[in-house]
Image (cartoon, rainbow, N blue to C red; front, side, top):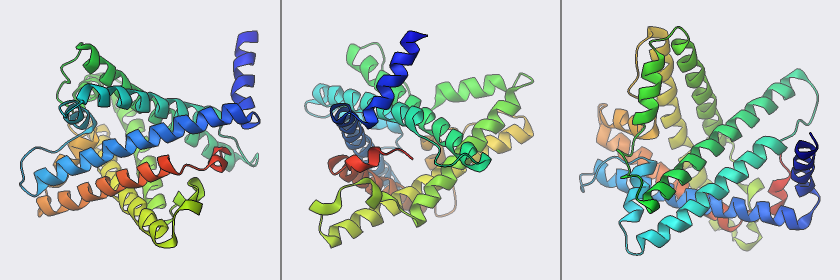
Length: 290
């Protein structure tokens, strides 16, 4: 029990210890720079596929494999692994440190939802970091770059009594994530999270527009994933759409799919740019986790 108490005290002391706060700040910066680079590559590869310049629709693992194939790819992968693990650590810290302003039931529910969202995000990016390490060690060929393992797990789960419930809950969780992205698109919080004193007014507006466009694109993708997961749960059938790459493929299969895909992928690209700005100008005041 004393070990757990010491760990909790150490985490909470981040809020009062400038040196520990600085460490957490650096983790956030490295994480956002890496996340931004990943989205830029995903957007670039997918736009290229949408307009017929070769290549294919890309997911996170495809982007990582593309980076691995560039000059000094091994060094880039090492930096990416560090950034992904940093982002995961930052999000885990947010999951633990996020606090409730008031003690009403509504605020408590919001707090729990935020914590769960942060934890899921942390786990997702940490798993990508593990994927990069496996590539570096030669233990993984990179797979298909999609969400096949997740698809297999969900589809296997559908053969059990609790499978549809699980898929429905996951779909609902993704729906909440989609709604949060739409909220960011129309009520951006970027200026609250970066130190804009070094940016002129025009640059600040451009970065905010990028952030809004990217959040809107992510909202569309998460919304599609949520729809297919919840529809599969209702029909008690398997799903083939449970990742961003699957959602992008669905967009491409629609009427005017190439145009729609190019628009959404461009949104992901500019979102990556906004994330890199967040990493470069991350504000220390943003560590006051709410």
